Amino acid sequence: MREMNSEGVRGFLMNKLRHCIYVFLAILLISGCSEKAEKEKQGNYDEVVTQEEPTNEEMDADNGENGNRADDTVSEDVNEVEAAPLPRSLEELAERMPGYTAHLSFSDPEDLKKIDELTRNLSDISGKPSENELDHFYNELLALFQQDFMGPEDLIAKLKFQGIGNPNIGNPRMQFKEALNVLVILDSSGSMGKDIGGQTQMAAAKKAIVQFVEELPQEANVGLRVYGHKGTGSAADKGMSCSSSDLLFPLQSYDKSTFQQSLEQVKPAGWTPTELALKEAQMDLASFKGESNTNIVYLVSDGVSTCDDDPVAAAQSLYDSDITPIINVIGFNVDHEGQRQLKTVAKAVGGMYQDVQNAKTLQNELNRAKEVAKNWADWKKKKGEKLEGQRISNGLDIFIYDTKEETKIVDEMQRIGSVIQYLYLDKKNMSRESHDYLRKRNKAYHDWVQAEYNALREELKNINEMQYEEGIQALEEKYLQHTAEKFEE
Image (tube, rainbow, N blue to C red; front, side, top):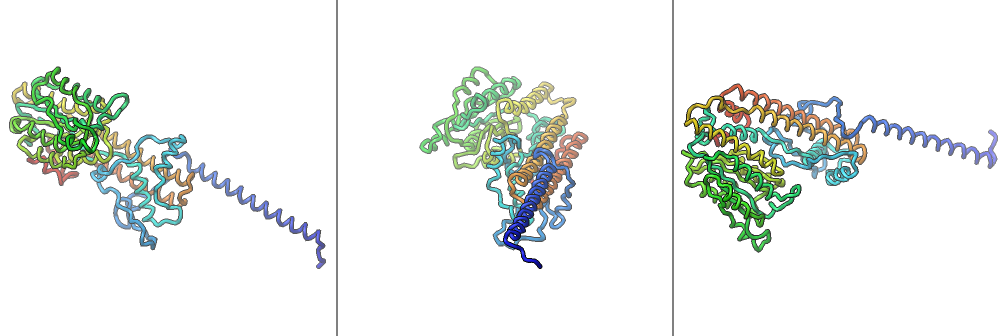
């Protein structure tokens, strides 16, 4: 073979180097096009994923839990966090604390910053996580964007309350008596001074309460108790504030001038002694025995009791007394901790709990009592005669309930699905395999939630084809077996 001179060797090497560079650039180009095509295939973050997903049964084949299948390739890391089970019933679903539910747009830079902030502390699944680790990651993601679902217990409490006075009800507590008394217990702690749309929470509450009592039947008695209205929120004033609760308008016929003067003097001030207010309310109603009085109590509060007390025990004591009141709770622009406690109070006494954000929504909730009061006035005029057509009309409430929960299911599923895509495509926080698994898990879980609400919807429809009490009892036996005895007194 003929030997190359130095110039020939140099040329040969340059050609080889040039060839390698071309090949490398070609690979980069192909890779970039592939990634672009993949991103286009995924589509917009806000769109719902439509690929075929497994059912709950397929995902749960290993252990039968809702979306919590065993992992065939469990990591050997002894420190791996075990994924907690997802809700197994609508009641458990309703007990979960809501996460961030405000609107988020993936085309808004500020919203993307918010998403980054919310997801910053999620578990790291950038490597090759086990299915258990992915399940734990999904649980974390779900908690961030958890909707505030309303369980069957809340709806049943509403249907019960609206059925007061129904001739088919055998429970004496829920029957109309000769007198009707409505006591409003208003939180007047410092946090009620918070601004909501140009007015304080206290101003909004006052407006709604005045409108409510003005429209009650003239024969009904109304009372107003406030609490937490003295002192300040400072530690030095805690003792005084936690002992402040006054009956500003004793139970009597409504007098506009006196009632409004009493309410006007209240200013948001100190701590929140909820137990004290409920104990004092029991004394307010002591002479109005349940055998001859229909007693309704509304507790309106914007948060957790802050006086190291036990409002749940106080509510139970009032409920179990011979006053036999119906106790409802309204959370006014309340935070997660306060919502948990107020829901527990309502649940302990089988009453309604409802979140409201402003004067209008508070007014809407109080209007439920106004309708009951109107039915009582009609019953009283007829002196116990059987009222034609008094059977509860609950179709509208069932429709509204079903529509709201359906919207929450769709919103939650879409939000989580979009965030998974965002973390995969833009943040590169997971592999394609992890992305696909989380997407499937998200759909399987929300398919289960939807199926549970579909079953409840059918149960609710059956109420209208039964006697009222029979229908309510059937719902309780199916969904609330452990609390049904509260209404069998």
